Amino acid sequence: MTQTTGLADPLFKLFHHADRLSGLRQGKFSAPIMVDIDPVDGVCNLDCDWCCQAASRASRPTRIMADETMIRLGSFCQAWGVKSWRIAGDSEPLLNKNISLLIKSGHAHAIDMGLITNGVYLDRLSKIDLQHLRWLGVSLDAASAETWSSLKHARQEDFHRILENIRRARSLAPELDISIKFLRWNAEESLSKSRFTVPIRKISGDGVLQPVLQGNNCNEEPEFRALAERLGVHAILRDSYPKDFPSRYRFAKCVATPLGGVFDASHNFHLCCDARNVYVLTDDYTRDDWRELPALWGGDRHKEMIASIQPGNCLGCAKYRMNEAIEKYIFADTPDHNFI
Image 1 (cartoon, rainbow, N blue to C red):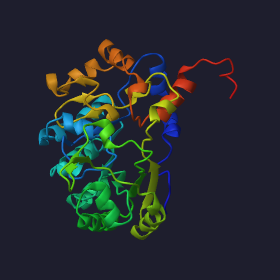
Image 2: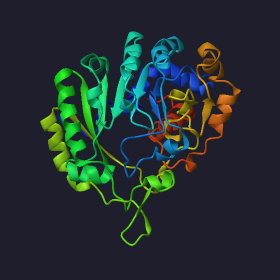
Image 3: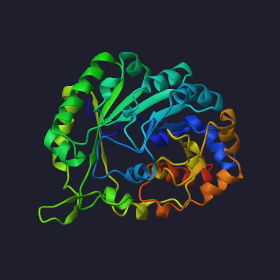
């Protein structure tokens, strides 16, 4: 049951949204296909060495999404034309104890939903919550409590709690697509959280402040695959962002940006999940009884913000392959484009 790819390749999923791609080519933006929902801002219960969202958390006050907001998001997104939610964030989403309201709202309005969590509080989801999800991803990143604790700077017993939570979820929702995720991390080659924000430091034995940095987890790959088998879930293994990642981009503009967006707990709407707080289209998506955001979408200010994005300045881009494909095959006019 283990696999390295998880869900279907996003590039093939683009075929389902030819209308959106045609609109992008013509400079007309439909509602985003998928949005990120951040039920929590500015705080996490773990502290991963590679966290690319550490800067975002540090820049935002701690906020829990209001119950009323979660209740209304489903009807708003359905009316706007959003197809799916990825419930995640720069923080741990299950720190919001009322997250069931969000899942219920999405389900009631035909929104496909997936959840990414570190798993410590996965037991806060009920059987109904789990059954309303299309997929569940648990960012585990280790096969042993010792390695997990070292990478996450957390208690080893929480590793075992996560495994028990996964077993519970598997039992309550036998048909749910559940995966445990393993991000290959090597301090010598990978971007660390210190590149995204001010390094978290600790006092060493001689009283000198030292950056916290661990080695790698790559030697646990075989054990991780075996762990997924025992839990009855998928294994998704991916590489962390390399230090020279921007030099590998093969696209000049961030053309995939209008396909997504982020609703955060503070009512900001961000254009990019990898650059929360950098490109904020509105600081209150509930303004004017939730009518401001659709009015701004696809307007001059929105397009100017997208045009201002310089991919080379983005240390990590989760949509880099999508950007490359859209720019090369959808936007480009080539002499042989009719020969398929």
